[in-house]
Length: 97
Image 1 (spheres, one colour):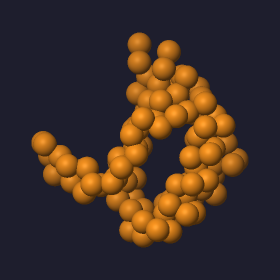
Image 2 (cartoon, one colour):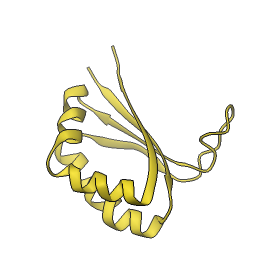
Image 3 (cartoon, helix red, strand yellow):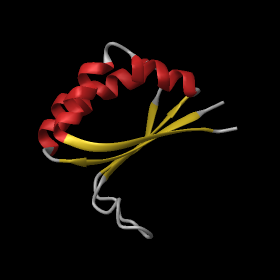
């Protein structure tokens, strides 16, 4: 069953973020079977102020196991560390029944 990764992120240095995280991570996500549905800055909250101005990324995956394989892969670990150094993110995973 499909699964989705939903990320809200406050990026402190967008240019560096795209170069050291965004581009290489996009290629890795595709290798693990994921595809982007939404990638964009400037989220507007209709209820609750926490997401205003954040970037939002939604990716679709074949299943939760594919997300876990990506997330725990040795290739992703240095990318995750690079992201954490220049942004603050919340990451959720939802599996569709």
